[in-house]
Length: 195
Image (cartoon, rainbow, N blue to C red; front, side, top):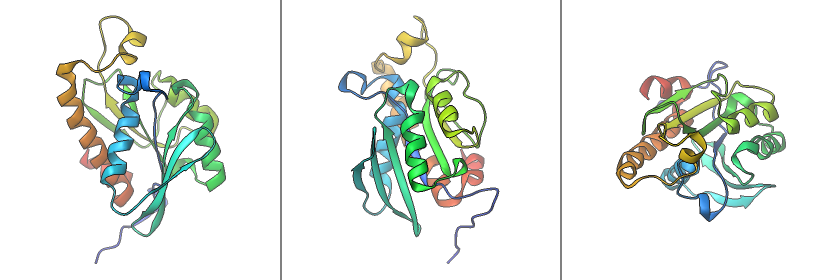
């Protein structure tokens, strides 16, 4: 049996966070694809995950490949996502390099994925909040493209998916869950090469 290698350059993912806005009125919006992808990942991970409330977050905890794994859905609004994430990271002593954040991206075409080890916020206020509260930009990012709308960024991200966007987004969410699982199982380097 081949064991997953963990190196200093590729530490294990211990926390996966999906970004979005709480409340039923936002549940099906483009800005909530991070929540949607996290739900898909949770459904596909083997084993059982126990749900818990921590501060302003819904969390799930389980074991994956012999390691502890947490999934988190901040319940603050998108632009304040960093507070709940940083609080959980402090509580669990999780380093920024052990974090993977999943979120929507206006600059990517609908359904396109991009996985990176670090970087800037790209104008995404939720990611900017995470960077500010965590004190680092050195965490994994899995971006899911939602494209740009014709009526401005705010109207586009807060609108529900159009009927013709639902099938491509379903495929993207499936691919995002697969990419996240690869990052968890085999490290970000392998996942970035594959996705």
